[in-house]
Length: 238
Ligand SMILES: Nc1ncnc2c1ncn2[C@@H]1O[C@H](COP(=O)(O)OP(=O)(O)O)[C@@H](O)[C@H]1O
Ligand SMILES: [Mg+2]
Image 1 (cartoon, protein in one colour):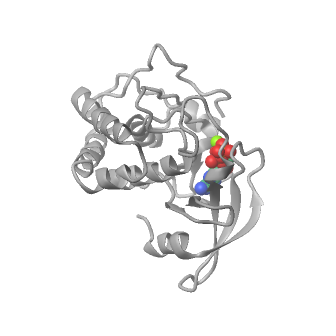
Image 2 (cartoon, rainbow, N blue to C red):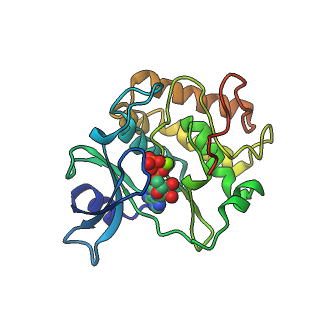
């Protein structure tokens, strides 16, 4: 799933800034990762912690860590939904570095979302686990082979229920076996290594809340419903 040489490059490689993401609220930069073990450099996103815009509902300077925590949960599901992401020092200090995914620009993202494409079911389960409060259409990156990646997971893992997403196509529908199996893998991970790794990135209460969300999803065995006290759709939705 995750190529070890990509992870090594992200962790140890030299980062060459080549541009910025237009309109990025957190001054995200595009970098080229150079590493002697790599045949060719590859592109990545670098979000420096110092550039994070303060938000009312998340502690300042924690978004990059949340993105890495989301990657670790994605790895634990076995579904490879989040591109490889690491926390490291960079040209503007500590931040997250995430492999850039060259998606398929011909895919109609709006159609993918409004038609409740079944390929997005796993993403909806993942968002419920990490309590994603910003799953916009533009945070989905469809690949030519049909796989769909998710990006921009800086506002996740709150202890408050804040699920805000465009993926509400399966409210109250039972999970399929594959979805239950992914949830069980995360639950098992949270009994040991995953809990330790998340503990280095999140507040202890946020790790506990993650365990509770996974347990609740496995108990209910159904896709969650929107929380009546919270705007459940991000705006703009794409
Ligand atoms: N790893 C990635 N691979 C491919 N595209 C990405 C990646 N990260 C971000 N993008 C694209 O760049 C856009 C802006 O990045 P995002 O992480 O959403 O930044 P911001 O924090 O400013 O919202 C995303 O909506 C997506 O289209
Ligand atoms: Mg974004």
